[in-house]
Length: 241
Length: 298
Image 1 (cartoon, chains in turn brown, purple):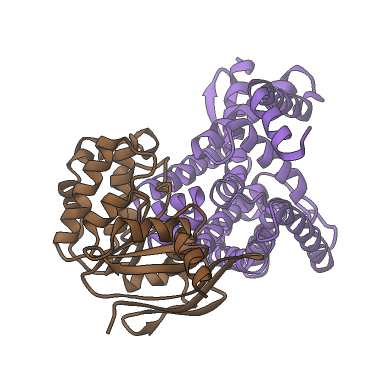
Image 2 (tube, each protein chain N blue to C red; image 1 turned 45 degrees about the vertical axis):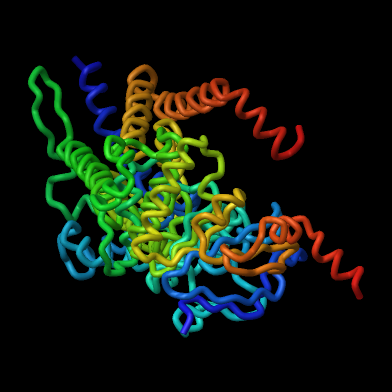
């Protein structure tokens, strides 16, 4: 059974339908990258899986359990954690407090504040600093650490490289790669195609709310993905018919 | 010497105002809700304590054992029944609905208890008028000292609770970002209901000291709300130590105002409040203009 199973999911922002009949599966231990232009529906899809955005149709299953209507905080207790776009740390609270608060669901697991500090050594000296004073890379590390503190089975990463210096992106991805090596299941949104292809087993490309191309990171070519990204493929199909 | 006594009295009175403002400031800080029924709810607690003291002849301090849990329950109901629903419709609706609630409470109390004024002072022996002799003909009321000490304990305790307990952390995080807090596994509805309960427990304590230090009737709530509001705004809403400072500044202004002229009590208090308010707006004038422009296109 797949860890995450999405079927015919529709998510709307009022009149705008951001996600259209999306179906896919994520297996235990897999790393899946979601790519696509701005407004393709990637963030909405991740928020829908995490629970911040209620779908209008379709089904989300975690390990066979239907969680489509489950409140966000209960999904965290089930093992879904989202690192939201823009990090969304509690800026007035310290790094340690931000990490501790993620223990609210009480989900058992191996993650502790100390282990997060070991995984992201750059946080060690900033442990008692307010998150508002951190650099972008430190903030992103805290945000990922905070998600890990919930001991997730499925980690959703939404553009963790957004707004970071290339150096910080390298550091953050080093940690992500370490997580992947430890067997974590990750669904990530990434704008940098090279990075996505490097870390992921599988790549899905979204266009206008739909998944238009899906395949193994090894077998899909850059051309196939960029065509899907810009919608060339769609036009190509239209010309054939 | 009498000037020094007036200063001391002002500071102690500030303790009472801080206690009144505590729940108001806590609720605003955590839930971004201005509860205009705050004063009336304190009067509800005062009546509850009075009934227990009058009918069952229990000490009002002992009666807190019953009244504070009831207030906590009222806080839960208030959050789930009124605040949560009205907050969904925008920032203004909770203000209107709690204003309506205040009117309902006042009139229900009036129906039940009539217009008679009451006080808890007769039920606590001589505490209401005992005083400490400071020498040189100066005295300071025992009740005022007790109120001040209680305010410090309450605000300090609340601050420690918010800083060091997991639930306190959850309350602070929910105040900062109610959406994100759900993403880390916190049930924000539950946390807000707990916070409302805590706020109303502080309101219950404020009701006790209101009823001990003065007379009250069903309509006494609005003046308490104004004092609490002024103390909160002077001290900076949402900060507990700021609330204590705000209460003390308000109490000092009123007491010194009364020292200058018998009519000066309320006038000086309101004057300081307005000064601080205008000062704040002046300092943040650019920010304020930006806000108006962004919000209303002025």
